[in-house]
Image (tube, rainbow, N blue to C red; front, side, top):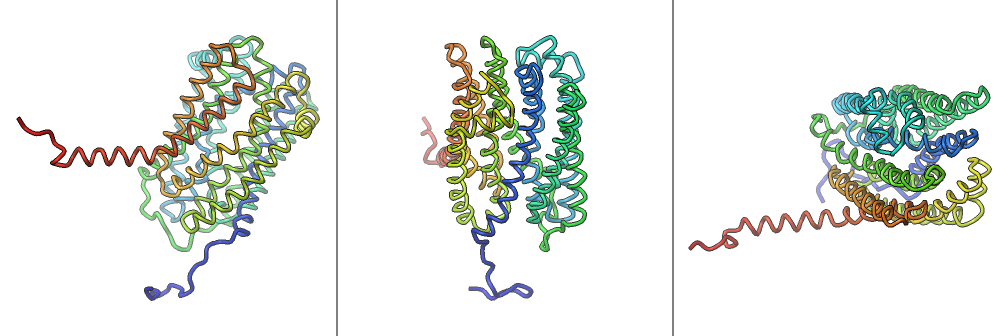
Length: 452
């Protein structure tokens, strides 16, 4: 054992305990639940309008387009957590975030404000006329939120790095409160559904950004030992593109399925049920996605401990979802709180029951995401996500053309896509090493073909 260097402590640094992991993790889970509750309240508000199925379907289409671009920013917290560890890292990451948000805003604005873009939206979902017009209005209202969303995620990552996860939860409670207040105001004042939902999202996002900025200014400090002091835009982009591709591919999964569902007879109730069912199931799904923050923050120090914690929590989350979905609790929540009725309620309950398979698959996927985030080899995440959507498209087309596509099979297709992604993540390193060995053998002199 080498003697400690001057200024270093002779006492070894012990890894965090499982209790410390829990104190870090539970506010993040609550944060995810709070953000998803906002979606439940939005669904509930739309379900109380006279033509609920149509309003839910319109919002499903508009959200799918918006989140296609917004999804690229989902891993911004992990990026700022990883790289904002010096003044240079802070500056580079912040500028990269601003430019990325502005670039992503351009295609969304084209879809919202130009006839060719609107035609493309209609073509993608097979909609036209008044329904397409309403989707476009949503997109116009939501397009400025990309910049707000990127900055919110940037500052959230810094707060997580500082282990201020309880503060992150409080900020998201403020977001939820703003959304609920606007939804109540819209219902009381008889606003149109588009105005009510869009104003709620804008008010919540702007409030969250303002509070996040203020909290970083007051409570956040850079790590005592600076890192990434020579960070470049190239390094930042190398980390970002794989995570962005992963998230964008995730956001494409639903639109792919919706585009096929919209071509079956009477698609509106089916799409409405899947919108509500997916959002409800995401409460449990999102709890497992928070493990990524654990990997980035603690993985290099104690990967085995993070893995043990992940397994224990996952058993509880999956078990809880099964209990909720397989009992009258799901119907009670969806009917009394969200407000869906009749045929849409029946289909939504069936979607939620099938979605119980998803957390198990997603958890295996997230485990392989963890080391990729730690080692900054995020490209394999993006490749896996491409495999997911290829599988989703092929299966959706197969079920559509065989007449078997409905809300249950569509949900199974979504899950099958994640299975394909996980298999690609598992096989990726092995395929890469095999290819490398093959190239090495080809370069050996004895492997060359004999001369004539």
